[in-house]
Image (cartoon, rainbow, N blue to C red; front, side, top):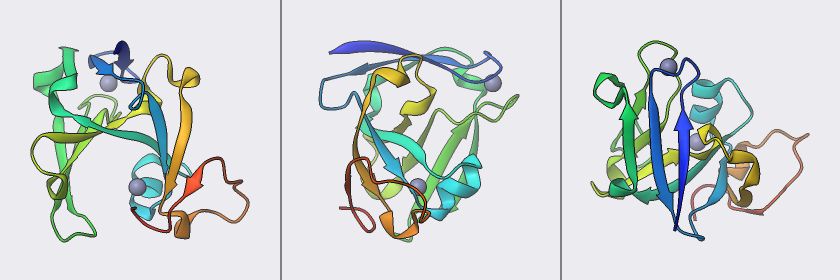
Length: 138
Ligand SMILES: [Zn+2]
Ligand SMILES: [Zn+2]
């Protein structure tokens, strides 16, 4: 288990997260919601226990954006009210104890390897495959 630090763009929201070797990875998500929320071609994520994430600054000030996921259940995106960086989201379909952490916001994001790609059906044609790809979610 290693502790990783994360921060939003403006620095008003900061957190630490404990990741075991199997969780210290990036899962690329190419879905159209991720494209829309991030402005990029995909997002970097991992599903972790909620208890692994601790906010050290600004946790109480986070705002929530909620939308309906493919499952029909709500997805809550938690974001910094000042700069809109989005440290994690909670998909009700995963149950209350799991959250989806944005691994791209961790200080050591460059050290983590991509382990899977989801929503490969929405991947841009010019993007190279970097890990095992699933059409939607495995
Ligand atoms: Zn911020
Ligand atoms: Zn996505």
